[in-house]
Image (cartoon, rainbow, N blue to C red; front, side):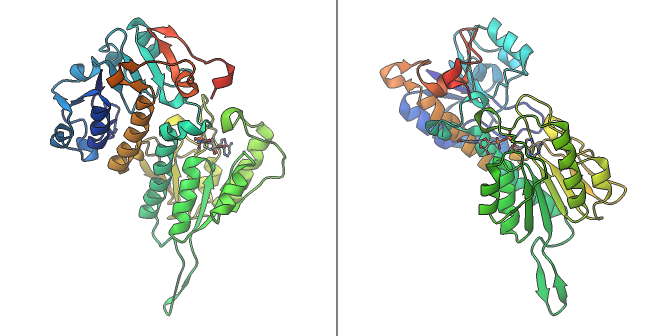
Length: 378
Ligand code: NAD
């Protein structure tokens, strides 16, 4: 069985779905690995390093896409999907509810498609396959680093004979995986951190990291299926927005991470909140790719508002730590692939009884298999 690693083509994407270490792991498990030349360059993995690990280097994308199993960091384009051969298996993020044209193309190619974003995350065994968490963890860290880089002061307080400066105040909206990583990073840099989420379970996690948990005066539980958030009532969103506007006047950095699976990101920080922020303060919107939580976010850009607030909408934060992001992503995907059988024993198959595999299975030989039946629904 040959595993293909094509170069990523998504705008600003520097990651790659295999490292020399994962190539060696796949080789020793009995797979052949074909890596497109230059695929690892953005993550500082050279062609020579892949070759030494046992990969065959392909000079064209087509050579990597025509393999038996193709691993990819981003969902492929329809043109890339069109290069797959009948009966082959794609393992990549798929977002099946939002990707109709891609699914139609993959159906017509009669391939198997496993969505990394569809693996049930609550399954403890599947934590080793969880690319969403690995990526969000890096994104949250990098958001604080980008903000700190723009903020014209320390995050920690400074107490010297030259005078006292209090610590910077950081507000984190959404305390999921990325939000918690941002809280931890900002705390480590010495900031005072406040956070808000719609899921009551987030309170304990925020407080355990030394963050202050903010609340509104409305009781509404935002916990939806699979530990994700559900859409909140307008009354709740209004209360949240009032809270954030009051916080905006005080905080030096606002980092937003609020996402609802399958929906556009909720707009939570309105123009009037950005208007009351201090000159020099910074916003980072991790929901930029899903439409943004902040009124002033421009995707993939850094802008400065007339009142001097720097607003960051970079959607490539994982690629700004590309080597580490690729390493963790590739480890997750390799763990998942290796869980699906043993090529030495000619056992590589899509096992419907395996909850992680069944949850991820979107297409089998071009047939729609998603959403999965109830017990394995993520
Ligand atoms: P996500 O990226 O989909 O969302 C980020 C955060 O935004 C979530 O915490 C969500 O509650 C919050 N949010 C949504 N709407 C909001 C609003 N209007 N205001 C404020 N916050 C809002 O989520 P994620 O980080 O991928 O994961 C969220 C949760 O999923 C985790 O905290 C956990 O409960 C669960 N999870 C479980 C596992 C596991 O069991 N292995 C792994 C990862 C995540």
